[in-house]
Amino acid sequence: MKPLVITAALVGAETTREHNPNLPLTPQEIAAAAAEACAAGASLIHLHVRDTDGRPTQSRQVFAETIALIRERCEAIIQVSTGGAVGTPASERLAPVTLGPEMATLTCGTVNFGDDVFHNPLPLIIEFARAMQEHGVRPEVEVFDSGAVATAARLVEMGLLEPPLHFDLVMGVPGGVPPTAQHLMCLVQSLPDGSTWTVAGIGRHELPLGTLAIVLGGHVRVGFEDNVFYSRGVLAESNAQLVARIARLARELGRPVATPDQAREMLRIPVAKRGGVV
Ligand code: KMH
Ligand code: ZN
Image 1 (cartoon, rainbow, N blue to C red):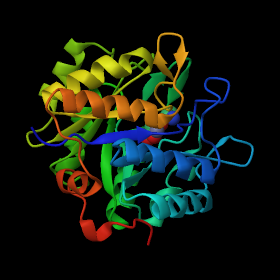
Image 2 (cartoon, protein in one colour):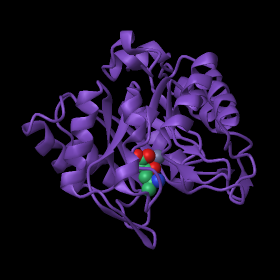
Image 3 (tube, rainbow, N blue to C red):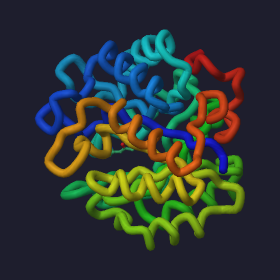
Image 4 (cartoon, rainbow, N blue to C red):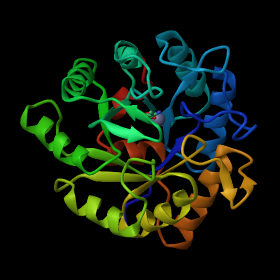
């Protein structure tokens, strides 16, 4: 089996210190958390940043500062979020893409998100995909519900996404695809041939879905963006603790853990792009 890419979603936009007091917030804290997660086996950092009050921001400057600090400490692929927080104005969401990072998220559909709506209408998806092409950024297609797979295929037909695609199957957001094994199989079977995929199970679904992905040949995302608990009622001490468990499970199940450069090769990111921000 191919080496396992472990993504660390360290911060997110919705998680707060009330959910877990160990949540990294400042660029320095995020870089330290990234370094620890990489040492534990992460080869991809899914990056959100916060302002000085700890609120989610899409500030180009804060992303640049955080990416530079991470770069000093680890070699992982850095993937910036274009999702931001629910309600982040569309005009702000693309800002970190203009830094020319190695990777960015591209959510391919609007979805109910708890009591809110995460807006991703088709014209916005097209605009974001074009910007990623212009800046040489490899998209990760975010799938919160099954229709997003069909939309991504449509973007391939329009010449806006280049196959093979890489998908992140985010399962268990209230309003999105349910976090069951059946739904995972259904999504995986619906992906275009040659695609790679990661699963991000929300909350208590992170571990079982991650384990299934290890066995099925997919990849795994963990971290405080998706889940703040280590086990029922026990908060995780760090993002690295969650990464280390997946790395351990992978080795037990006979799956090696990818280095950052192996992850680049599998996700088709030119090694020359390493270093990210241009
Ligand atoms: N915070 C969510 C509303 C992404 O990073 O691209 C969207 C999100 C997806 O986190
Ligand atoms: Zn995110």
